[in-house]
Length: 87
Image (cartoon, rainbow, N blue to C red):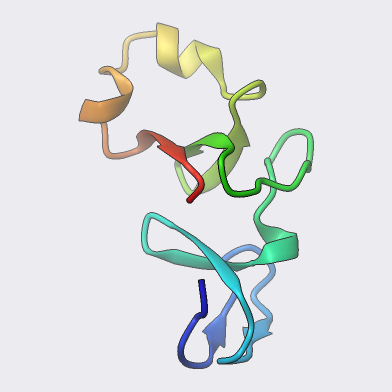
C-alpha cells in the first residue's frame, strides 16, 4: 500500500518517501524490507499470518507461545496480542 505522505518506519526509524510501498500493522507503518519477524528476521509478505505483540511482529512459527498459552486472554480480546494476516 502507498504510504501517501512522508513519515518514519516503525522498525528502523528512517524516513519513508510518499511514493514508496509500505506495510501497516496496528497503526504503524514499515518499509517492505523492515516488515520482518522479530525472531527469525524473515520478511512477512501479503498472505502471511503474523502476530503483533507489545510492538513487535512475529511470524506464525515464532510467536511467543508462552504468552498465548499462559495467563493472558485469547488473541482477539487482548490489545497487546493480536493475530493478523498480511493483506
